[in-house]
Length: 336
Image (cartoon, rainbow, N blue to C red; front, side):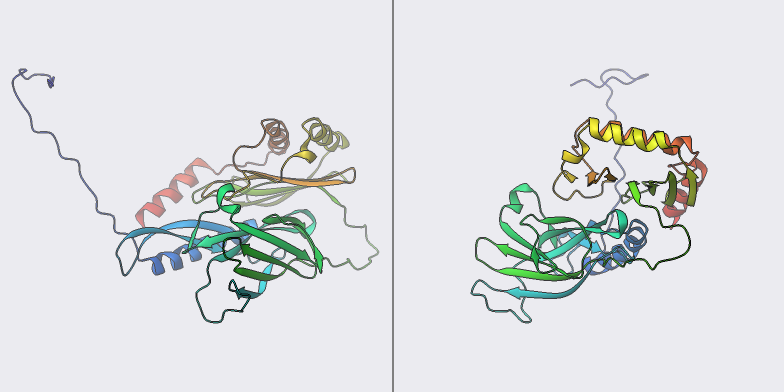
């Protein structure tokens, strides 16, 4: 193979330049997990949802590189808490102090009207590998307020006094049961003022492990709309406006046109690391549904997302951060 170099004869050889190599040492897993939990808590609280991340780290004993799952639960009013966990082996005996055959994390997303969707994610050896294939290895049984609530890995928009999910490993019958306290609906006290209007729609963007915008827009039946820019947006904080009746009518028409209420709740139906999601909740004409689009949603859903984007833009609310501020923040992070 000949090397063509300007200003040199074909027979002249030059030593190839050596690429500079940078030895990047990974943190030990215990330290990396503690750091990730601290950094992700603010995002979890801002979005009122579980934030989960696969953190690259180094095993302290074997010195091998690995990736450990870190799950951070939100501290907000529309969140659920695990109050009890029961682990049983294949014979049905309760295990005490022993390493469970697998573990289960509850991933949650807030819905409209203070509700929460819960997803039971199976983990093994501190890592999540939960897709359609591995999901088939487990059975699920949800109970909400002492009533059976389905056999999927998740339940949608729960608001109750108590809930639990039993996860059964089909190969050996071992089980883990988690007892959960979801958000409880409280009837508002009567007041002489105007009643609180009903939420007709919610449009929001979740974050990623970078600078993805995090915001939420709530639409009420009386035409009021409330913007909340949470992180990485040009318009920060809460802003309000009033829309005409035609705007909600247009949202309803597009939703019916694309068959929104027949779509799956999540795209895809398994967890995706480090990817922002678009969540749309609608409560229109007696029908209530929520769709989370991370990857692979029907192309028709884009029409409804674009409608919400156009409404936000018309109000002058900026969904992306100022370029100067973003560069300054990025430079500051690189210097740390």
